[in-house]
Length: 440
Image 1 (cartoon, one colour):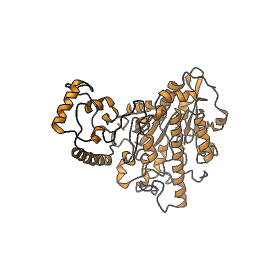
Image 2 (spheres, rainbow, N blue to C red):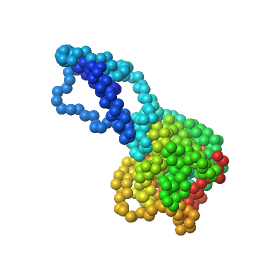
Image 3 (cartoon, helix red, strand yellow):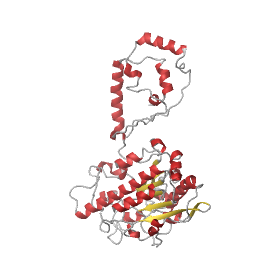
């Protein structure tokens, strides 16, 4: 992998050593293919290094074009012959100008079965998917207002993400506006299933009025609680990620709503990635303890596994108890241009994992005392510590990018209908199933 892109190193080797014979090359290919197939099954991609590249001790090879290199090549040819052309080109490698963009081909077998954690991808997209650089310049060039949107926010409550970001000054006279959007808040405007809603928010992002967005799309149809004895019926598995056969009409609508809302958020995040914005997607962590049952999870979704290849995207898994949640609640967040969030998570507990000891948390199994509400519902509410950490990461990004800009201080008029400030108590949880309150 190093020699494929490092032209100087390859040229040095080619002028010091002859290529191997065709028989040797065929044997090496067969061995490499067998190793590659075995490692892919274990989740290792084509570019995963077993050890970091390092410079070894001892004398280096003579530089390409030198007399010493020519003498070395002549002696090697005397010992083993001329070899084959294919090995000289590293199986078809063609010399190209250094400035030419490299073509990267990604195949299904290169994706892991699911994603638990990754710092950043490698796709820069001509700078569009960088953390800063050209992506930052593009974001500033198209800036019209500083608005962050929290989708699927649920009811407003004290200590939520909205409160942590509200009235935050990026610079003197420059305020970050925050909007919470949910069906239980805005009714018609909060119906994110509507095609008009998808087009509306895409326009706001593309025009530079929204510089960031995030949220946790409904997870009840993906929940691992459905595999427990006292849980509701399983609606999805890995083989049928969009719904098991023979679902009831109500179950089918519930699955369809969950899928469409997930795709809604991923569409917004992809556009934000292209426009230099920031954001996040939160969902329960892949239940590794259920892997034999082949559960459905958004972290096994092809779109998520593709997004994690972008240089501006990272994925971090952690336990919500390190932020003050009453239960363990393993969680994964895809964060777009929010590297501070990842470092803040790893500073909690045991690198983001529970440090409270066995038996310290209540189990999210079965029903509450009312006999109707599942105990998993209470953990749909983010703990204040998680909201604060997300807010700090968002503020750090916006300050770094937009602190020196000058834009109108008011919230854009077409976003004013989304303002909502009615608070509820922490014991009141938004409903699990909005499929009968929204137009699918």
